[in-house]
Image: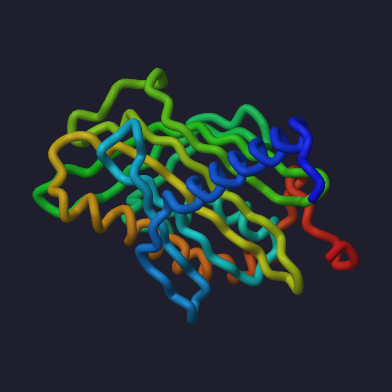
Length: 227
């Protein structure tokens, strides 16, 4: 039997460590809700920097990339599909890919509504056409509203990855600390209900002609011949 060299042993060890790391990262997510009829799954995981869970919603939908981005950027109708969103107002748009917006998130009585100032940045991979919109709160824009509790810790992203036959895999991932006194039962429901109902509503809303017919200079659809 041929003996492995030290270099071969080292390579196997490195590959094993890398694979175990990927496996551990994947196992960190727990499946919380599965809706096969609508192709939606919701996962959560413990965030090492916070006692609150991070969520990830994944959905498959038939749509163009431009339609999905057009829906995300249409702040006038955000409250019609983003779960518990009361309103979104654009503060500043330095460029086509960059937006600063103010968002009010509703909460059931007697819990106070939350508000946040969010910076978002869109990027599209030139090879895969995958679109990713990274989001993070900005705490230096203007002071909190006394009638609400300001969310000062939030980061997340939207990702639209083209699949075959006109399908797109949508990923909505966020970790946020809503601040203030929120009952545990409400927090636990938010990390599942927020991604699920947001994606379910998106699935319906994005089919409207105003989005499916949208043309955006900063987003390229996938040519049919490339799939």
